[in-house]
Image 1 (cartoon, one colour):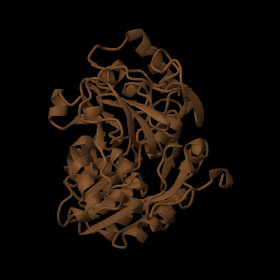
Image 2: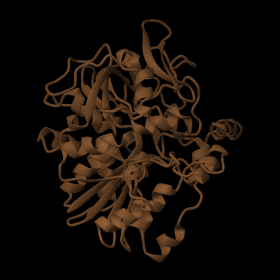
Image 3: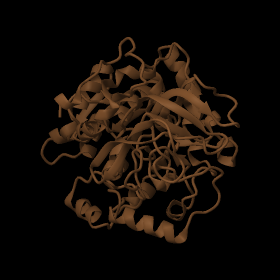
Image 4: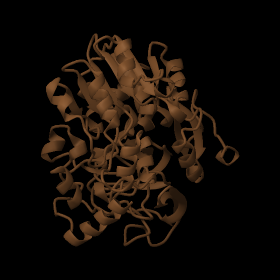
Length: 452
């Protein structure tokens, strides 16, 4: 929290660059002139401080830039990445920022430069906001678009910037997110994908992030025929990484999780019986994940994939160093992966890491030839047409990970349940007053006030 506040102060002192070609830092439609002055109010989920979110009313967004599209939201969700915001560990999050980077809906209005989408279209949004024309966008690296994020602190920390992102702090442009009833989508022609009638919201929604992020993790790390793959984290990303790894030809996939989330191992295995599991809270005495993996796979797996994050410290050293601001992320999972894979094995990092870490085993990386691959924020646009076709052919079924349907009004309770890895809650579909009735095979509504 202190680091985030310091970053906010520094950004205000130094100021933004001028590379963005759209208006940024519109993270709450009640601020400035970003909302409609008259007319109906909307409901939106806002961050109000560490471990606190509220659903509040605010003005409806309006078209600001010529390529903007206003979307009436019919579905959103919560992601493990949202928990990093919830905990206040992502820099430059401000009170009142609207959260949510995964959403679908119906186009209500478009700016004069929007030509591909029109009012009435059912659409899903990509969580990275891309211009479609810059050098990185032309290379399909849309999550590093050069024209949608002018944050200076990120550029200093990383030596470059990510694209702007919905609902993910001013560090990534300060754009209001989609855990709301309406949202402004800059460059709507680029960042919205039209959904066909045979793909309901409960499937199409997840093209916005989880389906593309997990696919990118697998293909970017180079999983191929015959590989033995170990996956850290059995949440929705890890679950889909298991599916895609087998689809890419992996001979074995070992899924690792434990603690409050240990139930997810059985959940994923119930969907894909081929996956092997390893519960790190049930290790024999004096055994580690590394030693157990090498018993399961002599020499170690070919590939290790991080689908967890750097926020959760296991040992006291990292716990206190993170608490005191001496590091932003723990290197424990990375070190486990580096020491677990075979010599010249591959390690792919998709779990969120915000800044710096201590005690990183760089020696093992160099001496044993480990290929350390930061997968980056997924360039959703690169994959979403292909993944949409896989859904239509029933080669993948997003409903395999969707366990709950809840109301937007219940977002505060959902954050609490998701944070504590509530038994049986893998992935939720969040409905608004504009949502369509549940489709065939999708969960029915759960009243969360009866659960929390």
